[in-house]
Length: 526
Image (cartoon, rainbow, N blue to C red):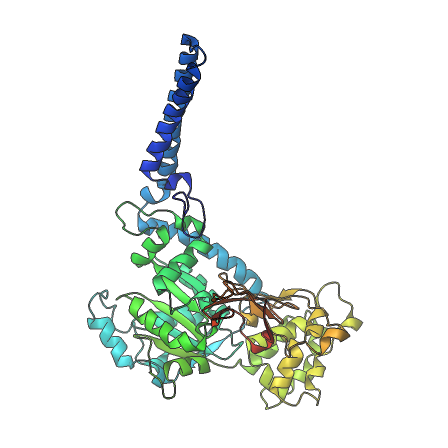
C-alpha cells in the first residue's frame, strides 16, 4: 500500500505527511529542474539567464512547499493545541445540544412528549443495591460521596415518569442505568429527552452525553472505546483531529473518552445479534473505569436472555441499576390523542376508542405504547388541507375482525393506512418519522410481509418507515472472494456479514437496525 494512503485507501491530508516525505519532496522540487537543465546543456548552451531563471523558480518553490505543509500541520493543531480537553468538551456540548434539540422538536414536542413512566426492574437482573453503594462509597478511583440523602434508599425509589429521569439518574450511586422496555415503549425518545436534560444541567468541563445506536457495534471484534471513538468521529468529524500535545491518543474523540468526558448512552442492545449480547455486556464491564457513568437501553426479554441464559453463562452489567418502562396510562393516551385532534368535532371521533381504554379490549391493549399511539394519531387525526370526508374513522380499531392486540398492531402498521396520511412525526418510533407508504400493487401484495414495520438508519438513530428497503453485506470465501447479501422488505437497514466458506461467505451477519423479522423476509446472495 502506498505510504501516502491510510488504511482503507483514503488519501492522507497534507497535514498528515511525515516529515521525511516532506523533505524528499522539497529536495526533489529543488534538484530535479537542475538535473533536467544539465541534461539539456549537453546539447545546448546554458547561459546565465537560464541559470538565473532556474534559481528564481526552484528555490522559492521548495520554500513554498515547506511553508505550506508547516501551516497545514499548525492549522490542524489549532483546535486541540489552544484548548484544554474540558474546553473541547464544552464546544462539543453545543453541537450535541443542537443535534438532539432539532430531533426533539420533531419527535417529542409535536404536540408534547407522552408521559412515559417506569419502575424498578426485576432485581435478579442487576447487582444488589448494597453492592452499588459499596462500590461508590469505597471503591478505588471513585469521586467523594455526595451529601447524605442524595442517593435513593433502594431500587424501589427509582420509579418516576417523563422528565424525572435526569433526577432519578442522580439517585443511582454509580450513575449507571439499564432502561428496559417492550418494543415501541419509548426507550429511545426517553434517551433523547435525557440527553437534553443532562446537557441543560451539565457543569462546565463536565462529561458530555453521547447517544449512539449499538446496532453498528461488533463486540466480538471491537473494543467499546474504539467503537465509541469511531462513532464520535462519524457524528462530529472535527473530533478526528489530533488532541493536545500532552495526550497520547491519536484523535480528539479518543482523548475525550480517555479523559472521562463522554457519558455513553448506548441505545438498542437488542439490535446486535443474540449470540454476542452477553459478550457485549462483558466488553462494557471491561471498558468502564471507576467514576464513569453509562446508560444502556434494551428490550426486556432480550436483556433477560442475554444476562440470564438458560444453560449458559450468566453476566451482569456491573454497578448498574435497572428500570422497566410501564404501559401508558389511559388518561395520558386519551389526552394526547384528543389534544392533537384540533377541535371538538375531531376529538369526538375518538369516543368509541376512549370508551374501551383501561379494559382488555384489543384496541386498548395495543394503545399502551408510544409507538402505537403515535401511529394512531398519524393515521386518524386531521391535518391542514385534509378534507373531513376523506379521514379514516378511529372506530375501525374496534372492528370485531381485529380479535387481539397483534391484529390491531398489524392493522396500524399497514402501509395503506399510513399512505393516506401526510408525513408527520411518530414519537413512539423513537428515531424517525412516518413517511407516506404506497399501497402494494396486486402483483406484490401477496409477497408483502405482515406487518410492514419501521427500520432505521445508522449512527443518528433515526427510524423511518418505508415501502421497501435493502441491506448490504460482505463475505469472504475460498471460491467467491466477496459476497453481497441483500435484504428486502419494509424498512431500511444495513446488514454486514463476514465469514469464510467454500462457496461464498458463510459467517456472521450484523444488522443495523433491521429490527423486525418482517423486514427480513428475503435474503438473497448475489
